[in-house]
Length: 232
Image (cartoon, helix red, strand yellow):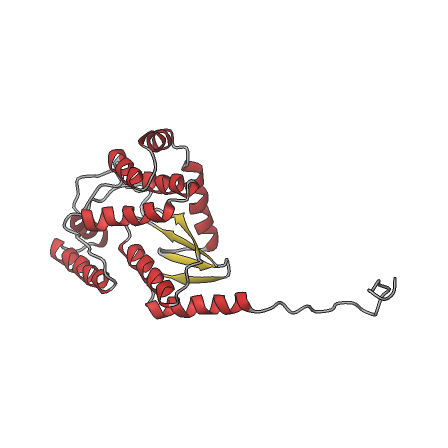
């Protein structure tokens, strides 16, 4: 089973949705899923660490007060806790995520993308680190098995920028309006951090289809000449 996930590392529901998917896979004891992380920037024009707090940014974006913004993040912290995640919005650093997506593509080329994606989400929401900072990205990459030299070479020279843009274009072609967005076997989609049971049911449906034997339909208009074991 192939599961493609479009997400952004500063999207709280992307981290929550990721954990719900993983929980569903664990409940089904299914370990053979091929999970592919796809790039999506919620704010491509975002500055690298503008100096704003996340509450200031949210208040500005939605026309709310700082206290109202804090209430919004408090609700998200509760939702995160329900799936075993610790969110610390007071520490979060609003930033640009383009290089973080490039780092994931480097990791993907080495089979390390799952580890790097988890570390990036943890860096943003639990540790309050700036994932637009090349030093922090290098530290994350190195902790997963990449080297500082390859990370800096790719990020400084934007060697995976075309891949990131390609995946973002793919999202637009699919009509993705928001993230997380999950696609199963290029056939079924789940939008948003749906309940765990929704993921379980979707995975079961795909597994059932994969286990079905194909039925051949004979389109011949009449019986034609053919060789058999007995006669040719």
